[in-house]
Image (cartoon, rainbow, N blue to C red; front, top):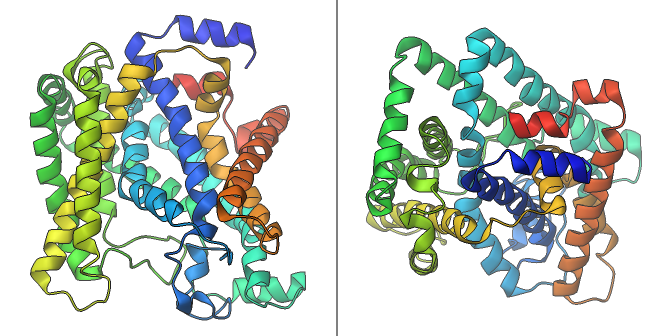
Length: 412
């Protein structure tokens, strides 16, 4: 989108909408940074070094394990792992209700299948096999495309990488349609509650924490906080789908109420007290880290596991509230760069894993500090992904299949 398009877009936005629009740009940069530095965290388990086609398949989370590590990346990734994906589901829910009202159930589902389902299949069949080839080589695989494809297709699961977000988001959208069909007054009622409770963020936080604990803690105790599915097409982290569903519907409720009222009102209590929410986010993060450290050897009693789960949802809510508060306080600057990042955030999320993993693999043997490697991978991934999207958007037929035009993405 050019400068004129940006000015036309930003001129139609309220201050709260602009803050959330810019937040989407910041969040996608954090996602790219998170994946860029995973190769350099000290947390990577020693048992990762197995064959590509042998359990525990830790290359799904850490495609490349570089010998250079930095503990600062562990702290960064731990914080992002706590709240980042919940924040993305919340943001994804903000504009869903107006879209459902406009397109009705059948049109809405058809649109979601096109915008989420088709890219998901494209990513599974095209992007992910390209992205994971360096992981295969890094684990000593035979450097032959044919051998790699035989090994890849012989896995008991189809690697999802970052694409798991798409199928779960699609599922939540379908759940929303079902809820609206069965109880058409439910979502407007949720919106009214969000508008009212949002004026008192502490109450909103307390309710979100309580509901999240019910959704997350039993599954975390039953499956552990780390277990992922090891079969099938749909990758799932067993303890988190209900938690993410809660945050998605929180986003739906906020969007139904309107972006200039309640929790996301620029002039509301949340943005004014961003320092308090920063303190809460940091305090709950370190509380979760401390309690969780007692569970890592797998011998912690159930009560400690429950406490770790409670601390997780507390830190998740704290992180999300801080991010929202800081965006409402500082995210009112109009920027063509932020606008381009925001309207292309979905496409960037879809393609960035390929350059990220390949750059990590290219730097494995480089005698550089982990911090410098992380910066190089992050910058290279952002540039390569962004350029790829901007070039690809010039292909009209490809736009209809995979990526949405910038102005339509912003509207939807």
